[in-house]
Image 1: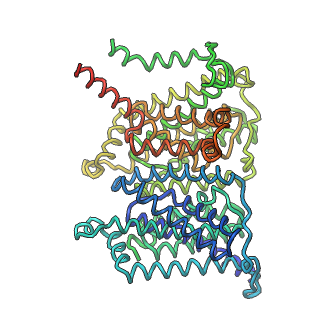
Image 2 (image 1 turned 180 degrees about the vertical axis):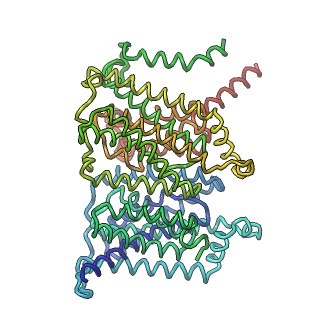
Length: 287
Length: 343
C-alpha cells in the first residue's frame, strides 16, 4: 500500500512537471502554430536563474527571479525572432531549433556541462507520512504549483478579455483577425505565459532532481511534446489530463517492469491514442 | 563550354574524391594532417558519410515535405543491429548485413504506418517520441552497452587497422554516391513526382485517386532504409556504436545540414552535410588555437562551443537565405548574369 501511495504521488509530481512545460507549449501551438523547441531553453534559463538567485535570496524570491528571467526571454524571443516569420510555421520551428542549440551551448559556456548541485530548500528536503508512506515534500510542491497554474490559466482563459481572444484565436484565427482584433498581441501573451510556466518548471525540476544541467530542458521537452499530442493541441484540460496519465504510466511501468519500460509505454500510449483518436484526447479547443 | 562543365562537374568532383588517398598534399589548418594521411581521410570520410545522411533526410524533408525528428533512430538501428550480431552473437558479417537490412525495412514500415496517420507538426512530435524510446532503450539495455556504447570486436579484414583508413574513406564515398543516385532516381521516378505533388497540393493528389498516405510511407521507408545502411558505414568508420547517434540532437543536426544547404535542391543537403560536419569537427580544434585563447572570456567561451556557432549560423540562414547555400549560388548566378547584361 505504501509503495502504491508513493508511486502515485511521485507520478503525479512528474505529471505536474510535464503539465507546467506542456501547458505553455500547447497554448503557443494552439494559437500561433509554433512548435517551440526553445521551450526547453526557457526551462533551462529559469533553472539557472533560480540557482544563481538562490545563493543570495530565500527560495521563494529565487523562484520569482527564475520565472521573471524565463518570461523576459520568452517575450524577447517572440518579438524578435518569431514575429518576423509570422505564418511560416516550418521556418519558425527551424528558428526555435537553432535558438535552442545556441542557447543551450551558451548555458554550457557559462556554467559548464557538468551538473550543478541545487540545495533543496528546508521544507522540501523532508518527508511527510501519507497512509504509511514517507513521501518527499517536493512532490507536494510540484503538484501544488501545477494545480495553482492550471487554475490561474483557466481563470485567465475564461474570465478575461485576453483569454477570450486566445480561445477564439485557437478555434479560428482568421475569423478573429477579420473582426479587427490584433491576434499577434495575444501571441506575445501566450509566449509570456509559456515562458513563465516553463521557467517555474525549471526551478521546481531543480528542486526535484537536486541538480541542474544545460540539457535538462531538452530531455523534459520530449515528454512535454508527447503530453501535448496526447492531450490534443491547444487544449489546456486535455493537457492536464494527459500530463497526469503520462506521469503515472511512466512511474508505475518503471517500477513494476524495468527501468526504461516506463518511457516505452508512454510512447506506446501515444501510438494508441493516435490510432484511436488522431486529434488527441480532447480535440482542438482552448479549454 | 559551360554546358560541358555543368554536365560533367559532378563526375570530375567524384574522380577527384576517389583519388584523394593518392594525393600527398599538405593542407595546414584546413585538415589535421597531410591530405592522404589517416587523420585527414577519417575526417573527410565522416563529412561524406554525414552528407549521405543529410541526403536521405532531404528525401523526407525537402522532397516529400515530412518534418521528421526521428531519423537518428534508423542510423542507430543500422549501427547497433550490425554491431550486436557481430560482437555479441558472433554470427559474422553476412548474417549481420541481412539482419540490418531486415530491421531497416521492418522498423520504418511499422513506425511509419503509425506516425504518418498524423501530419505536419504532430508527425514531427510523434517521430521524436519514437526516436526517444529508441534512445532510452539503447542507453538502458545491457546488450547495447548502455551509455558507454559498444565497440566493434570483429572488423572485416580489409577495413582493419589505421593503414586501411583509405578503404573506409572509399566506403563512405561509395555510400554517398549510392544515396545520391538512389534519391535522384527515386525523386525523378513516378512516385517521386507524386511526392512533389503532395507537397504542392495534397487535396489535388487525393482527388486524382492516389493515396498520399501510401506514397508518404514509401518515401519514409526508402529514406529510413538508406539511413540504416549508413549506420553500418558509421559503425565501421568509428569502430563501434555510440549512443550519441540515437539522440534527437543527431536528427536536429541532419535537419540543420539540410536547411543550411537548401532543402529539396539538387546538391543542397550534400553541401550542407559536408559543411556542417566539417565545422562541427574542426571548430573545436580552432577554438583551442592561440588566436581564440587570447580573447576575453565573454567572447572566448561561446566561441568554444561549436553548437553555439552552428545554431547562430543556422538562424542566419533561415532568416536571410531561405533557399540555403544552394539558393545563394543561384542568387549569385542571377547577379552575375545581370551584371554581364549590364556591361
